[in-house]
Amino acid sequence: MRRIGFIGAGKVGRALGMFFAKNGRTISGYYSRSNHSAQNAAACIGATYYEDLKDIANCSDVLFLTVPDRSIRDVWDQLVSLQDQGQVLLKDKILIHCSGSLSSEVFSNLKERGAFGFSLHPILAVSDPKTAVEQFPTCIFTLEGEDSPEMAPVRQELLSDFRAMGLKVAEISKEKKIRYHASCVMASNLVNALLAASQEMLSGCGLEEELCEKALSPLFLGNANAAAIRGPIDSLTGPIQRGDLVTVQRHMEELSKDERDHQLLLIYQSLSEYLQHHKGVNGNER
Ligand SMILES: NC(=O)c1ccc[n+]([C@@H]2O[C@H](COP(=O)([O-])OP(=O)(O)OC[C@H]3O[C@@H](n4cnc5c(N)ncnc54)[C@H](OP(=O)(O)O)[C@@H]3O)[C@@H](O)[C@H]2O)c1
Image 1 (cartoon, rainbow, N blue to C red):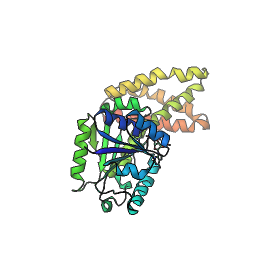
Image 2: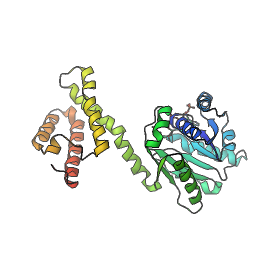
Image 3: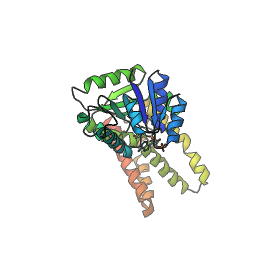
Image 4: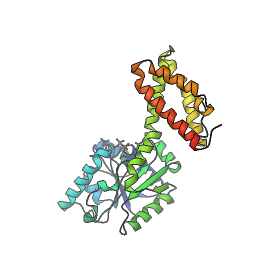
C-alpha cells in the first residue's frame, strides 16, 4: 500500500489525512511551514510529523502538496533541489496538489524526474477539517494530470482508489482548469458579493443595521436551497420570472439616481439580463 504524506498541515491537508486514515490508507505523516501545525495534524490521526522536507519526501510514495496555491511551485522547486543534491529520490513518486485553478503543469520537468503529477480538487469550501471529512463523499472531486501513456496506469490507480473510498471523482483537462475554477468561484465567493450588495442596498432603506443583516437570511437560504434542488431557472421567482419588467425597470431607475450606486446598478442590470435571456432559452417562461 502506498504511503501518503502531506506537505502543508492546513485545512485541506488535515481533512484529507483524516479521510484517508479513516479509510485505512497508510499515512506517512505531515510536514508544514511550522512544526506546530504538522505536529497537531499528525497527532489527530496518530501519524508522524517531520521537521525536514527531505524526510517526509523519502518516507512517502504519494506526496500531497496541500500548501497555498502561491507556494506549490516553491515546494516543488525545493524538492527538485533536494533531488539534485542527492538527498531525495523523486522517481516514481506521485505528487498531488489541491488547487482548483492551477494544473499539474506547476510541477515543471516532471518527466525528467521520473515522477507523476496531478491536481485533485474538491468542489467544497473547507473551513473545518472534521466537517469536511463527512462532506467529502457528498461533493465532487476533479482529477487532472497529463494525458500520456506513462501516466495512464497511475491515473487509473488513483481513480480506483479514491472511488473505492466513496469519493466521486471526475476527470478534467489542464486547459479547462481556469474556466472550471472561475465557475466554482461564481457559485461560492461571488454569491457572498451579491449578499453583501443586497445588504448594502437594504441598509439605505431606514431599517436598523442589525435587522438588515438578519432580514435577508431566510430569503437567501430558502432561495439557495430551492435553486440547488430544483435548478436555478426552474426555482426562479420574482419580477423576471413573472415577466414584470416594469418593476425591473423601476429598480434600475432607483439605482441610477446616485453615482455611488453605479456598481450596484451594473450588477443588477447584468444579472437581470442574464436571467431574462436564460429564462427564455430554457423555455421556462410561465
Ligand atoms: N480551503 C478550501 O476551501 C479549499 C478547497 C479546495 C481546494 N483548496 C486548495 O487546497 C490547498 C490548501 O488550502 P488550505 O485552505 O488547506 O490552506 P491553509 O489552511 O492555509 O493551509 C496551508 C498550509 O500550508 C502550510 N504552508 C504554507 N506555506 C508552506 C510552505 N512553503 N511549506 C510547507 N508548508 C507550507 C501552512 O503553514 P503553517 O505550517 O504555518 O500552518 C498551512 O498549514 C490550496 O491549494 C487550495 O487552493 C482549498
